Length: 576
Image (cartoon, rainbow, N blue to C red; front, top):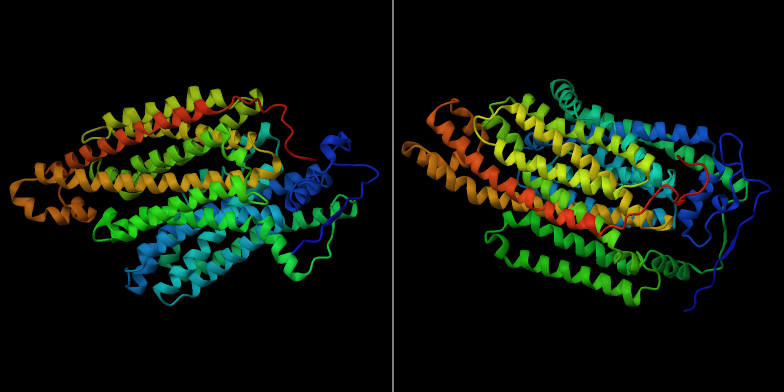
């Protein structure tokens, strides 16, 4: 059945007033790209129509939303074990984490198409609704099954909100300033990383965890909806100025369905989302199978996941009428290198960080609070480094040299030193020093990686490439967690058996499985020393793998084109 064509009518205004100082930009910068998808056209019209004041207010709201989201994420993580304990049912707890992490990792792909086809505000509002529903469900749940479902809604919604905000930043900042603006709006992590513990403790001591989720079900929409209001107001302002394309369609309902399925590249989206989900599930489920990686279920999931991803690439290359992402962009060396670097970063991070908190308590003899302070040094350092690198890229226009000659070497240095320092008897100051090195490297790598992939794409593909980058991060994290678990399960019990006094060998399974038991032995006792040395040997292997991964990361950065972003005009109208 042939589809009726859709006529686009754009009325050109008498004058474009898109800068707060009243200056009129050149026509090339002002014109909305009529070849882009509707969501991209609409956001370009908004940025042409709004004032510098509206832009500044929007960014203040962005900062506040990231503050609320960061606080909520940390508080939810702290409350999770207390919620499942209240129900006295732990059997579904692993499933909760698996489902929410995997579904949250792939839904940004769908959201990217919603943002492009229907519009940024529409996708953002959908995420607010889903997140709020999830929080209300968590506040009202009466069993662990309902809590599991609520966690999925919460993860999808809140991941979507933060993803939408990252796309907003890309839409409203020049490529030259984008790294700095990303760093600034995400800087609330400097504060929120210290708040989760006190907030969760206060609710648990007082009205209870339900009231915490109930409070956030009000706070989240209260802080997120005003930004939506700014975009809707300026959308109608742009419409009055004649900047919004008028869509005149004579399609029947069936033709509209076919049209949007084509515009969404529904087949490609299903193939990629299902492929990534099936590929990620084995990394989370293999520990629940009696045969581990040899279990038929795990093998089938991996095979079908890889097969669907390959079919997606073939579909995009040969059959897709409207591609999810241009095939040439999929093969672009900068895009591919940025994805590989993101994968390497998260793989390495989860290798060295997975058992770091336990190491600080068992080997260094820090309290839970003291261990958390050491761990949060990484968060603080990453945020500060990201701001500094954003300023550097803004002034030089270059991102590849910063990552190649500073970010990657500093990460290798920090991890390499940690191989030597993560052992019994070391001064905690050396561990903090290594944390700071790795944090400054991570902040550099994250900002340069995002700029690289966005520099290689046009404005209409920004939402897609950000989502693809997130998928590679999820895959890297899943592989990293799996590698860490495999090394720990192989090295730690063997070294315990080697180091433990003979009289403690019957307790080996309990010592291996329970950190409380490990901490119950006095510092300096033969058993505690044996546990500490076993930790040191296992940590050494984890760090060796985490360091070796950066050879792949180095090659990924070498693949990038050295694009000077100073003079690239990627967005329209008033932008930072």
